Length: 124
View 1 (cartoon, rainbow, N blue to C red):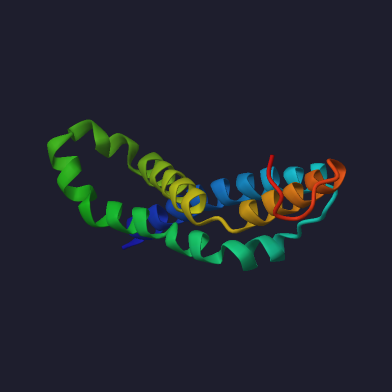
View 2: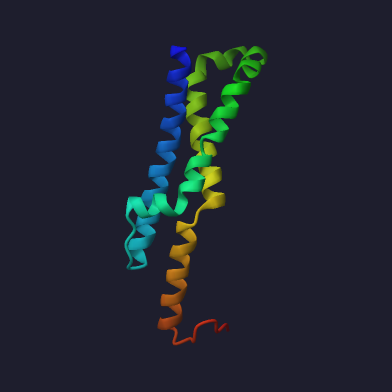
């Protein structure tokens, strides 16, 4: 039972690594767009993607035993595999479901249109 807890913590670490990296990137994008982004606002907008990031490590936990039987060397890297699956799963779900990035792009579009003297909804 203790091993499972360690593996779950490894997966959470991978998810946290990616989530904090994404927040840092989005905060930089917000700064460039002359707007602000708090961590709370990021979580409020992207909570679905962050929550769904737990699915890949959960599925990996269910199927890990079969993979370890077929690939004996995998047992040496169990913790690392949970970190990687957590980070990659987080990357995929947050890329797919991110609302914060869309909102920042909308802000940039409005500001670009104002700078280009375009009316709203006007295209070239």
